[in-house]
Image (cartoon, rainbow, N blue to C red):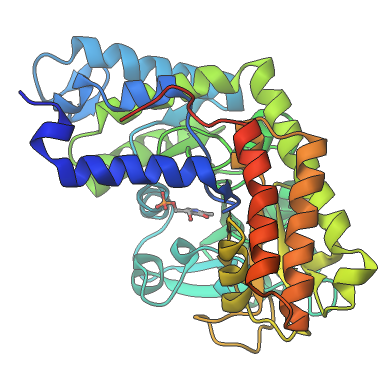
Amino acid sequence: DLPLAELDPEIAAVLDDELARQRGTLEMIASENFVPRAVLQAQGSVLTNKYAEGYPGRRYYGGCEVVDVAESLAIERALAVFGGDYANVQPHSGAQANAAVLGALAEPGDTILGLSLAHGGHLTHGMRINFSGRLYRATAYGVDESSHRVEMDQVREAALRERPRVIIAGWSAYPRHLDFEAFRSIADEVGAALWTDMAHFAGLVAAGLHPSPVPASDIVSTTVHKTLGGPRSGMILSSRGEQWGKKINSNVFPGQQGGPLMHVIAAKATAMRIAGTEEFKDRQARTVEGAAILAQRLLADDVRAAGVQLVTGGTDVHLVLVDLRDSSLDGQQAEDLLHAAGITVNRNAVPFDPRPPRVTSGLRIGTPALATRGFGAEEFTEVADIIAAALVAGAAGTADDELLAGLRDRVRVLTDAFPLYPGLSQ
Ligand code: PLP
């Protein structure tokens, strides 16, 4: 029973190197976060040994009396955080949660209507080679050509045209709130069910900083690891449990999955406990504030002059979408440039993007992980200025080694001042 470093030095080195990378860089991928140590502990526990097919009190395996406690707590706490009268905490991931939701709401061949992938939707909302595009007749609404916002009259038009069985609200790359009541009334008008995928903004919803989709939607799915800051996994909620609960349960297990990951479910319970705290609310408030500070800096004249704009001209949430369509930098170059400065982001297509998906004309930059690290207005102001300096120099062709070394020094001051997982070694 050797420790990892002795049994498998190569993988131990991966863990060490990744911890060092996370500590030494500024993590600004909008879908990432740093879980608390308590979550690492629950997730790395002996609960991984337990098979527990079924649901608490109704398992197909013996010896589930202990893990039942974890799953019941996770459900109870998820409902306390988000409201509603039904929760399923078993999905291994966001994509699997979404597969179960569509299984509950539609039959193969039925029409679904979601935000176009090219305009910020998710793969599981109808992408051609995803299960959602293969099993269902996937149709899409887009954002408006000039405002770049989801305009509800256009969603309604698409719904009247396509007559979907399911309307999907939610996104992976969109910087504004959605109007869930308007989605509800369109769904009612065309006789569709409304599914909201709040994976990205669930943490903001939990903190009361974003409208909740739970009351208006038939079913809400989420990941637990983005703004919500828990273990990698998914979750399904409903305020209409009477109508959908049994169908969702059977579509998760046995529809999509076998044995639930009880170690992850325990970690979800812990994450839901944290999501009910004042510290969590404060962190989400700093997340939103950080994105607003970043937006403000990137809208300044020097950045605009470099051909850099923001999709929708700003943000209401935890991310900004940088629009490089008028810049000499493309998404790939901008991502590489920030990487060289010690900042991790991902390139992302922007609406009406002329560049191919592997290159793109955009960057998605998010603040959740840095807010978790402890950053507030002062630090986000400095981060925003580092990003602005990198983009301006990159567009001007002056981002040489010396400039990048200077930016990396500024990044190091921040990472040193906010140590990540102090004292942890893997
Ligand atoms: N739904 C949305 C809106 C997402 O952005 C994502 C993650 O990228 C998912 C679902 C899928 O989550 P996972 O990566 O856990 O399968």
